[in-house]
Image (cartoon, rainbow, N blue to C red):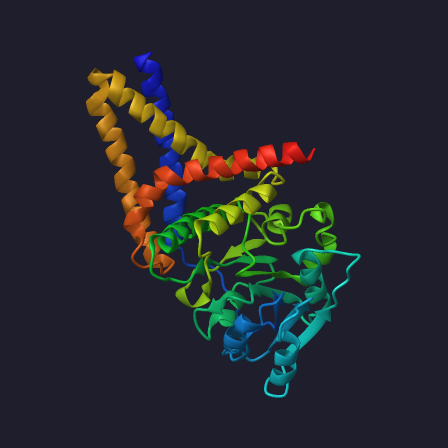
Length: 366
């Protein structure tokens, strides 16, 4: 029994270290090949009743230091002042384009329709996506993402973090965002891309249409970003951009309930990932849970293994700490790296609760 537990502990430790090596690659990543041209870019922003955010943030996208681009805003059934705002901004910014989806009481739709409308309205091959409540880290946002627009690439993954504000919840959300970012960006660098975030994502217009848009998952309200990337990304056609200037920040949830609902919504799309993606994306958290269970069991019931157990746990925590420190620096997530140790234990329980909640909710609906 002791050998069995020790074996499980050793196997899960190795798996954990392999993931952290991948995360560290993201921490120190510099793109090997960058575009020498200046491809024209269509920035697409879908907005539903987000006029307050557009009023503050849209000028930051319209004043990017880039010679040839347009900003396409899709006014998705907004009942606020979005339409008037766009009309007012148009004379000042000729490269602003906007289109409107009118409310239809007989037909409801999710963000995928708005994204599709925006893509059809876009003038250029390269599409760069963000949200109405996002802000770019710098006027070089387009430029830094665009340097990955090479002939070999069809997708560019960027980091979309959250704004900093006082409070523990904000820090937990940012830790979670940082670790998710290190995972999907690190795996993409390692040749295993499986998702992206619509807050900071670029891909070719031709890729969208050759994939028939969102046809394979049009019945799911979410997934306009991660499911599309999961279907189309591979080691050859996907690039990663991690410069400080390329980051976007959006407004995080204000209550734990809203954050929990967000995590539940994200889990509804992950079940549609490819089998390989489910394994690679979920392998870290599963091995983490098993590692902690084996660690506690061994410490409680096997005193003779205690020294080896402490060494194993110490190795993992040292590598973790290095990853958290350099990861927070790379993604400019200040003041949170020490909380990542707490979240390392707590977040699996939150995801488990969200999964169980979704499972029984779906079962009741059936």
